[in-house]
Amino acid sequence: MIEIKDAIKEQNAEIARLIMMAMTDECCQYFCGEGYGLDDFYQMMSHLVEREDSQYSYKNTLVAMDGQRVVGVSVSYDGSQLHELRCAFIEAAKTYIGKDHTGMDDETQAGELYLDSLAVLPAYRRQGIAQRLLIATRERAHLLHLPRVGLLVDKGNPDGEALYTTVGFHYVNDNHWGGHPMKHLIL
Image: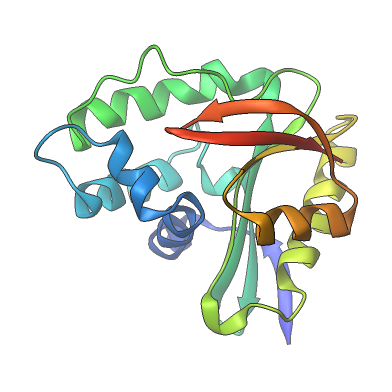
């Protein structure tokens, strides 16, 4: 039976891999400096998940568990804290992937719980786990007194967009992030 729980620090390696799955290898590589690759990006993400002051922190993560195995994640945070939380990413990127992302575009804003990453292991897909993670994320927004959940979905990901609209997300506007044209959806 799959359980949705708050993540713990010791799950950082599994969480980092799922975040990268959500981002796609192409997007992860886009963020890397010359001479750096996916292994470097993974090391950075593992470090960021362990931290409490990172947008990718285990503190911002819900996990779908099959026994002791992490099979899905939802990483979300208060959009008003983006710049504060992003400092950890900017600092780590210089060290782990050799690139300064100080001028990165904002993907969220105050007034929403931003769903940064949602991923489920391939063998566990189409079992309702992603929907359960989305519902738990909406509940987290209510607990934090945030009026909505927002996310960006790649325009080239119609399956992802269909999943989000099934749960009630709707289109707000277009965006561009991580080298890809995106849609901003809210719930």
